[in-house]
Image (cartoon, rainbow, N blue to C red; front, side, top):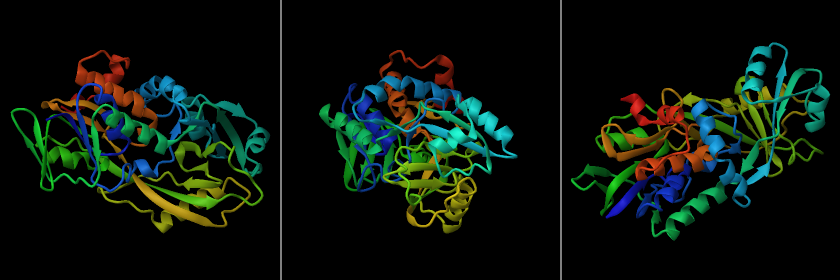
Length: 357
């Protein structure tokens, strides 16, 4: 008998499993052949504490010690917001929300030499933004589960979930897993898992987000450039392994599936980015898409379902999964263990599944 059985091997499930493994025996089930196969493996993850709704920011801020004290998890990046004529309102809103320091156009071009000084009229910069080594973070959480006697099992597609007097039975092929508490961390599939367990779905919607990896502008070393955002997060460009990741920051509602990027969406994103720079994109190296899943109010969903305390949600991470994972998973463990959380009461209420009851 497991104490906790987790469905989902992305950053949500792995971080939850690591924390819960200190409270009891954990088994984590991932349907794919590799961990982080879907959204978590396709993330351009950034740790930016001011990014998100108030409840998300509360989690971000609670993560500071974990990230900064965890060897090699973060590397400096910085974030720059640029805007053109007509984008003043959206620029001011974003600059205020992310506590940005104003830059002159020349200062912005000193950071990123290909910015078009004839078009850009506004710029802001926030140094407190870091790249997250997403693979290393997932590996460390998985290792913590195993170190504490738990198991992480891939190629384990759940076919049936049954409520029992002692907890739950979860069917995977010919194997039945028994557990006291079921943790739903299935990403875009969380509502389907809930329905399978006889729990009312919340209405968590997956959205497709597309990314193109393009060659760096000729003659430029982009590795130390900040991530660039357009006002209203209309697009972004992030240095990555000597190339640039360019995204239209699209949010297309879709059903859960193995996502792929559409050519037109990628072209639109690259065209938006090119409006702000002097060097056109000459070659696309690769492209992909992932699914970002949001609850109706866009807050994460963390905690026990109001109809059954033995069913825990770790869901709706949206675009904040990696940067919230340490604190979000600790909050889940505090709820499961009945211990006091450092997250403030207002944020806990905003994150609780009970808000949909």
